[in-house]
Length: 518
Image 1 (cartoon, helix red, strand yellow):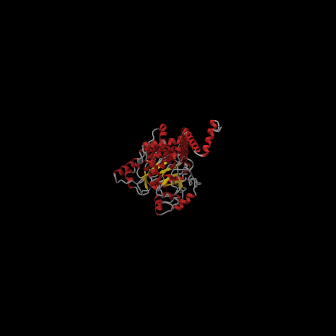
Image 2 (image 1 turned 45 degrees about the vertical axis):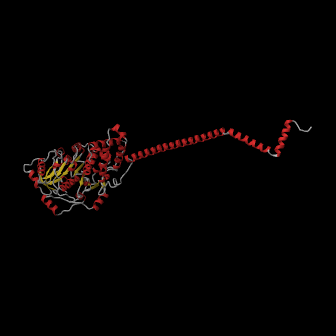
Image 3 (image 1 turned 120 degrees about the vertical axis):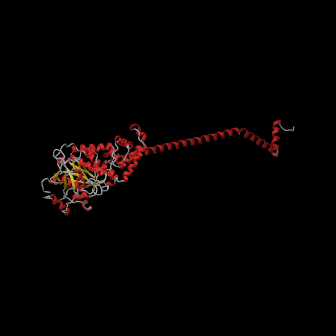
C-alpha cells in the first residue's frame, strides 16, 4: 500500500484508525463471536506489523492464516470494502512466512525439552494435584543433583521408574515420595504420549531468536504455527503457548521503551490458557504479561468473550478491537456490558448497543495514542488484508517451507545421551554386579558343598579302613589256632602211613638210644 501511514492503518470510521508502533507492545485484545471477522482482523494487524519490520507469531487453528503467504485478489467483497473506505493505493501483495508445526507435518518442527518446560507447566500439562506436583518437583531436583538431562518423555519416564524403585534411598534427602503419586504421574504421562506430546519434547530445541527475523526487504517474518491438530488437545495447545511466552520472557534482554516491538505474539483461543489454571499459574501468566512488554514483546489475546480473560490480565490490554457479541443469555448480556465498560467513552456512540449491532468486518476500535492513553472508542470498518483470505494449498505451503531460512535446522531429531541412557546404563551395570555377586556366591556354595562331600567321603574311607584293620587284629588268634589244628591233622595222617611208622620208629629209636640187638 502506497498511501501515507499504510503500515499502521487498521480501520476507518469517520477518521482513520492507526495503531501506534511504540505502544504496540502494551498488548491488545481481539474479541467477538464466531463468524464476526476476528481472523481477518488478526491478519490485517499481522500485515501491519510486518510492514513496520516487526516479526509476528500467531497460531492458525483453521488454516486460514496461511493465506498471508500469497497475494490476495480484488474480489467483489474486497472491491466493495475498498470503495466504501475510499482507499487509494491499495495493492495486493504477499508477506514473508515461516510455517511451524509441533508435529512437523505442516511446517518446521517446534520442540522443547522436559527441563526447559519445567515442573510447573508440566504439572498443568499432566493435570496433577498439589501432592503429585510436589513429587514432580522432587524428581526434577533429583535430576539436577545427579546431572541427569531430561530431554524427552522417555527420559522423564525412566527417571520416574528409577526414583520409584529407589524411594527409600531418596526419602532421607528429599522427603517422602509417594508410590501412588509416582504411579499417577506415570499414568498421565502415558495419556500425554497417546495425545502426541512426544513430538513436542526433544532436540534440537526451538531457539526463540528464530522468531525475531526479517526478510531481505526488511519486512517482519510472519511465523505461523499450524494448530488444527494441536487444538485437539487443548491443554497441550495452551501450555505450549504459555511455555513460548515464558521463554520469551526469560531469554530476551530488557529493552525499555522501543519505537516499535521486537515481536508481536497473537494468542488465539485465549480462554484455554485460563481454564482450570491454578492460582500459582494465573499469577505467573499475569506476571509474564505485565513484564514482557519491557522485553519489547506485545501480546494480543483473541477470544470470543472478554470475560474469558481474568480482570488482572484484561486491564493490561491497551489496544482493543471488539467485534459483535450476541446477547441471547444473561451471561451474554453480562459480557456485552463488561466489554462496553472497558472502552473510553465516546459521547457520540452507545457502545453497549453497538456491540450487538456490528456487522461482519465491523468492530469497536480503541488504540493507545503516543502517550499511552486509550483513544475514544470508534465504530469502524476493518481494512481488507493485502494477502489472500483463506488457506493456501499444501503444495504451496511445502514450497514456502522448503525455502525458509531455517529449513533443515529442526527437521532431523537428535537423541543424545540423557537420563534414559544414563539410568539404563546404571541399571545394566548394577544388574551385572548383582549377577557376578550371585554367581560368586553360588560358586562358593558349590565349592563348599564339594569340599564337604569330599571330607565326608574321606571320613567314610578312613572309617572303613580302621574297621578293616580292627577286624584283622581281632581275627589273628583264630588264624593261628586253625593253622595248629591243620598241622596236627597232617601229622596224624602221616603217622598212619608206612613211612610215618618208620619215621616214628626211627625217631623213637634215636630218642631211646639205639637198637634192641646186642
